[in-house]
Image 1 (cartoon, one colour):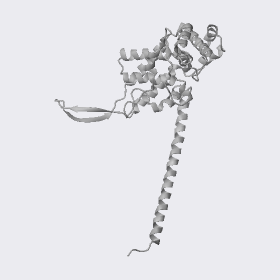
Image 2 (cartoon, rainbow, N blue to C red; image 1 turned 180 degrees about the horizontal axis):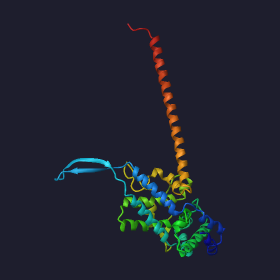
Image 3 (tube, rainbow, N blue to C red; image 1 turned 60 degrees about the vertical axis):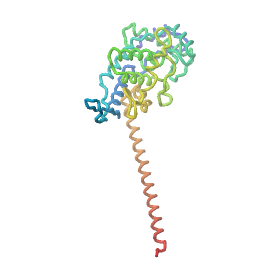
Image 4 (cartoon, helix red, strand yellow; image 1 turned 135 degrees about the vertical axis):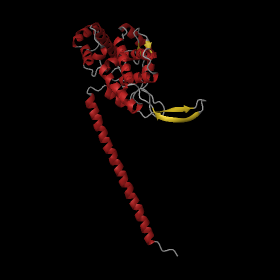
Amino acid sequence: MASLSASATAGAPGTQATETIVASFQTDLPSISDAMKSYVSACMAQDLTKDKTVSIVHRRGSGETVHTQTVPEKPHNPTHFMTCARVALKHVNEASLPSMEDWRRARAAGAGAGAGAGASSETGTQSSAAAEEEYGVALVLLQKVKAAGGKPTKLFGRRFLRVTRVWDAAATAASEELIGAHHLPTELVEPFLRGFGKTISPRADTNGTIEDPSAPGVDANGAAASAASSATASFPQQNGAGGQQGGVDDGAAGDLAGLVWARDLKGALKQRQSQRTVEVRQRNARMADTRNEFEALKAMVHGAEDEVAETSPPLH
């Protein structure tokens, strides 16, 4: 991507240090493709270990219920997760961004600084000029990558998705293809796409949890793509008491974003494991202290009872 730097600098607006913006896209790791691989692994692991049951009703020929059997729900076919990822990445690669003029109109007509394709920065707040500069660089870089036959998902990372909001439209198109053409179950496809969209949100960095990116995206014609919010509206939802369908549960949402977009996934996993080990040791120590306090209290009670028994006059 280094060869694109000069082109991007020449073609983008000049209100910021454009070279710095280009460098931020170049060094933003992991790539979208690599992050998707990590996300698929997490979804498959969660699906295999989910604690969810389904009820099977056994009936006689007359339709009378004989008994109901509760059995563990079967996990999804692993290839379905990979198909979801492949189709989603394809639509990201095929996506086209609005021109700067369309982007400006959509931003102005949307909701000011809170909406539009480039409103999301690393912190979620950005001046109009800074957002325009960043989006302009992303637009030029994408045009150059496509002209060279490259795949944006292999060359760009999460910053590109945040700046362009291209995931909104890509997820909507992917959902339609996966459910319509590939005949995958809705309860798998929609949570999968929502879950990955959640890991993109800037709010995942600031408060440890992932919230709904409220601003609408912008489609290729510059119009607000509010319909795409159905694909990124929320993290995979719990389905009944036992678990959820198709993705990783809400409780793991904050941790998931950090793992999916970790520059060093193995290192991040090792660090998480070390943290869990420390937490287990601390919890065991607290439990031991509680048991010791209980035994001491019980001994005090028994001692007091014995003392009362020794000093009390005999009953006649």
